[in-house]
Amino acid sequence: MPCFEFTHCLCVPLVRYPAAYDLKPNAKAHVRILIAEDNILNQKVVTKLLRTFGFDSTVVTNNGKEARDKYVEEAEAGRPFDLVLMDLQMPVMDGFMATQSILEYVAIKESEGRVGMYPPRIVALTADVLSSVIEECRSCGMFGFIGKPIRREKLAVIIGEVAVWVTEVGFGLRKPRTRAVRYARVG
Ligand SMILES: [Mg+2]
Image (cartoon, rainbow, N blue to C red; front, top):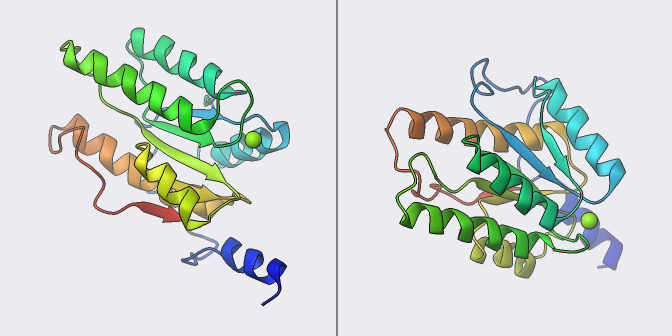
């Protein structure tokens, strides 16, 4: 099979959702989102898509270090992000290192007994959905991944899952550290 056909095949979403697929009205109420993406066009695509769900105040950072620093800054101010959309290939600090750095920071704060501190759901944004890359995402603590090109229905699936998790944690129905039932895979 020619190489480009194989690549094209991997870019097709694993699950097809109807065009009208949308978040439940209350799904977005409690989800704070941080974007880490060095490509300006992709930044615009993601923020525009998030805006269609009603997320008007997502924070955009340009590399992994900025994302890590912003996460810490907001967490220290008592406003931790729930979802981090993390590009993998970025200058200064890549998505894997940034993920590990954020999760290490949270683990330290948890061990110090910081109230309300729990690890965010970190979701990779990647055009490279080879199983080795996805396994690397999983092993460094990511919640899942979204394959590029990023489409609205893919974001809806991830945000919907994170919204349920945030709500359950908020009501004490689930321990923050509980792993997802399944690895969120939206190729
Ligand atoms: Mg990049």
